[in-house]
Length: 290
Image (cartoon, rainbow, N blue to C red; front, top):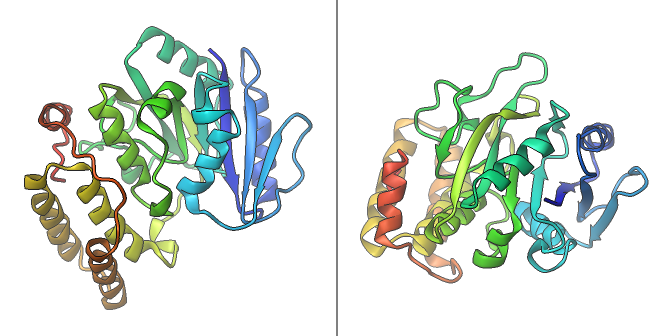
């Protein structure tokens, strides 16, 4: 299987980007073709053979990645699998691309693989980086219902069938939107602990827009994808969870502002998942109400 990689950058981490590209170049098996997307910024110097796309403005994470997909042809059709990697990450092992090829070849219904993210110094995997409710053991691989945006592999047939990431989300929950559409189309998603991306331990709330966009996109996610009966249940649960976490007053104000924006702005096309998909998500351990 032909494997490509999409990396988006703001141009502010040239050393980390070069280290990541070196780790991709060291992958065993056939060469991984790489496209680096400058998301509203010039692309730093990259090794020969690495293609670049420079966007005049920051399109956000999903928009930037979608441009990288199209660099491999419509829906990425020039390759069979695309890796999506954060520019400050690093592939920990040289066999990751080969493991991806083998996983997709052996399971024709496998659409997406979520890698394990580990801190390069401690080896620790944050609980939020295990895409399931039972996240206490990050070394256990399993079927899951979503995936990690900066450390994954997607079969390009999935993108051709259900479309790419939702551009308007800009940041937060775009992976779950794609995951739910893929699952609704009959594809499966695996979390693989043996496919590792080293990434420094960080908190998502470091981004100034975090609380607003998390809330807005949560509403969009539900409005776009859930059966009407589940929309208020899903959003009610997340409202309760947010309050129980006792965020600061400014964070809560931003969250409620985003929550309101999610209802008063366009969420894009609505394609509610089938009830059998709801049951599949439930059997996989994460019913779409949480």
